[in-house]
Amino acid sequence: MSQLLPPSEYMQDHYLHDFEVFGSTSMCGFSMADALDRRKRSAIHGIAEFTLAQFGLNLLNQATFTHTPTYAFAWKRFSPTFADTHGCFSGHGMGSHIPHSILRFAQEPFSGRDKTQGISLTWANIEDYNQYFLVALLKHFMATDEGATFPLEHFYAAIEQDFDCTASCLTPEGCQFRHVIKTIQTNG
Image 1: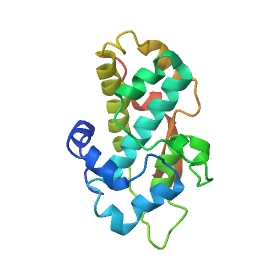
Image 2 (image 1 turned 135 degrees about the vertical axis):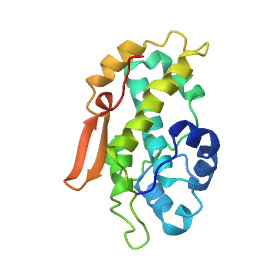
Image 3 (image 1 turned 90 degrees about the horizontal axis):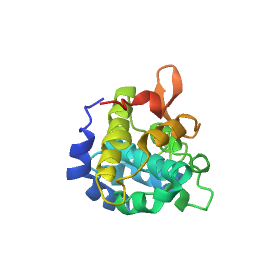
């Protein structure tokens, strides 16, 4: 497996291009299978990085809306644009809009197997990107006028109790799940 770009570098230098190539504001089995297609995939700078970004942004979108709803619209305005798992109503999968289904499907696509190739991720990759989105990006949000009073500790405590806030990684032992709180360092 090749080394992934650090999340801040990927988001600054490549994310918007890859989002444009992805070509959808909806994240579902169909749009992800399309991105994993060898032809489109070759135009995306970092399909693994893009997948981890979609996971992080969808997770934050869902968790902010669920656990800190008074900040949901401010977060949405601040957030980089992303392909929302709630944007597909055609039954194209993605586990009823649960963010970890993005990781699961990208690693082990269940449609278009003749044209798609799953991505390889490690827990270290997932932890790096979770640290960026769930800690660094939230702190950037809190540095804005709209996010200045965001209750970060309350948010972490709330998502710690939320089963939907898990990540999945395909390992030699099979698909494993970890709660995202266990993949980040919130102090310091």
